[in-house]
Every structure is written in structure tokens, then in C-alpha cells.
Image (tube, rainbow, N blue to C red; front, side, top):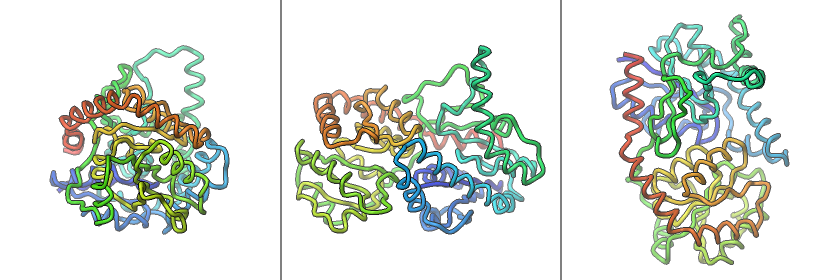
Amino acid sequence: MKKIAMFTMGTRGDVQPYIYLSRALMRAGYDVTLGTHPCWRNLVEGAGVHFEPVGPDIDIEEETTVIRGKSKNGITSILKTMNFIMKIIEGASDEVYKLCEGKDLIIITHSQMGAVEAGVLGIPTVNVTLQTEMIGEKLRKQKFGEKLIGGFIAKQAAKPTNKIRKLYGLKPVKSADEVMSDKLNLIPISKYVIDRNPYWEAKNILTGYWFEDEEEYTPDAKLEAFLAGGEKPVVLALGAMSFEAESDRKKLDMFVNAFSKTGCRAIIQGFQKTLQDYELPDSMIAVGSVPHSWLFRHAKFVIHHCGFGTTAATMIYGVPSIPVPHVLDQLGFAMQLEKKDVAVKPVKAKDLSEETIINAINEMNSTYAVKQRNAESISEKIHTENGLDEAVRLIGKVVG
């Protein structure tokens, strides 16, 4: 039995795609190890995947929330968060190295963990890329100015890799591309959502989204009664952006007031600290961890932060979006949704107010029939792709 390992760091959205991939690989007969923060043990093991703790035992969502809360500037906030994660990755290299030993393949997730260690051990790799902007246009002839700018960006992007290479006495690389797999880079996005860039090398392949329908989920009586008690609700799902270091009543007030003034019934995820002493109107309900594969199918539309996983879920389950991106990669995913006309124009986090939320809801309502039809059409096509099966097939060609 061939042994495969992969490692990832970050919030639940950074872990979930690799749980799906791990399960698909296990069904195909591979021995799979998934390494990540100790706080995700129950999530990973609960999915039946072999888990290995990597890095310090911290609540990563709470830690990153505290970092974000200390910075008013969105760009500064994401940079500080990325630096925090990269320090954890650098510090965990010894653990990663030991877990790589004896494996037949290392899948390098979007966090890039394991790339250097696999290289040192001479183990084949396969990459996964979530943000297509990170894929170089190797087949396009670049102008002199583009080469200069591209070289500078590549050098900056390679810094975390070079810090780990230094631990093993290796020379620095000029670009992170130098430690990427020369065989395969999986992009778990649907070809019905983005077009394949003609300047990509052949190894960069759109597989389709990775997902599993969690049909076994049963809502509690309160949520079931709420859904049965009126028209389809809006779902507010800001992901890690709704985890609070402290109560954020002002932000929740914006949404609650906007929902009330536009006549929306609403299901609210997150805001646990604020909701402890917050009385919602009868037209709204707060829920905890409900699978998006179940919840989104009961939503009229979803207001979300446009993380990779949430963006994918809206497309997979055919529901329109009001994007509220907080950082650059989320803005990119928001633009994907707007381009397919399944979302209104993004409401950037810095522009968030009761007025901008109301305007976005009104725009959604006035164009809803078209956006719903588009979302449902794309969802039907996505379900024909079998993205996980395609990923497993391609990995099998590499690992043998």
C-alpha cells in the first residue's frame, strides 16, 4: 500500500479540502496521513482520516482573530497573520520531516508545507494551488519590465521557503516555483467557474471542486422549526472573520438592522461572544457549526467572506452570494462569483455599514431570478466533474 502525507496550517477552511482529498485517496487504497494544528484533531479523526499533530497546541482561529483585531488596516492584518502562520510552519519543519520519512508521495498543500523536507528526502511531490494568481505563466513571453516585477514578487514569495531550506544547509531559491512539483499541480476549482490559463504549463490542471455531500446531518428541532416557519432565509457566514477576540456588537447590529429593514429572515453563524447577551428578533436565528453542504441548500442567498471553501460551497450547492471580502485572496474569489453573475458587487470589509448591506440586499433582490438561475446551472455542471475522482486519478499516475 502506497503511503501519502500532506500538511496544512490555518483555519477550518484551510483544512477541509484536504480532509475530502484524504478520504478519496483512502477509498482508492492509499495509506494517508494528514498533519495540521493539534486543535483540528477531532475534525480530522472524526472524518476517519489518520491525523498527526503538527506545530504548537493553540486555537488557531482564536489566535488569528486576536492578530486581526489589533490592526485596523486589512493589508497589515493579513500580512501579520501570514507571518504568524509562516513562523509556525518554519518551527514545525522537524516534525514534518519525520512524518515525511518512509512515504511514497508528499502532497504539498497551498501552505507549501513539506516541499523542502520532501526534496531533502528525495520523495516525489504533487502540489495543490487554490489561488490561480500564484501560478506562473511560464508559456508566455514576458516583457523586460514584467520580468523585473515578476522576479521581485517571486523573490519575496520564496522567503518562507528559503528560511526552511537554510535549516537543512540548502542554497536559497529565487522562486518558490523551483521547489514545486515538476509532475502535477492540482487546482480544485471548476472549469465552469474559471477558464484555464493558456499560458500555464501542462502540469497545472483544473480538477473541479473537492466536496462530499454530508447527507447524514440532522438539524436540531429549533433550526428545523425555523426553516419550516417561513420563506427561505439569508445565511450570514463570515467564516473565521466572525470569530471575535471580544464582543463586536456594532458589526452584528449592522447586519441585524439591515435584515430587519429589508424584511429578510436570517440564519447567523459566528459572533458567539456577541450573541451571548444579544436578543435576536424572531425572524432570525443563531446557529453553530452546521455543514455548508446542508445549510446552503436551505438558503435564499449567502452573505460570506469569500474564503476558498465558502466560495466553492455556494457554487457547488447553487446559491447566490453577497460577498464581503476582507483580504486580497477573498477579493479574488469574490470577483470570480461576480463574473459568473451569481453574486452582487462585493461589499469590501472596510466599506461595511448598515447602508452598504441594505444596498447589496436590494441589488440581490432585484436581480435574484437571474443569479439563482445562473448558480443552479453552474451547480449542475460542477456535479458532473467528479473533482475528487479526477484528483485521485492524476495522483495515481504520479505515485504509481
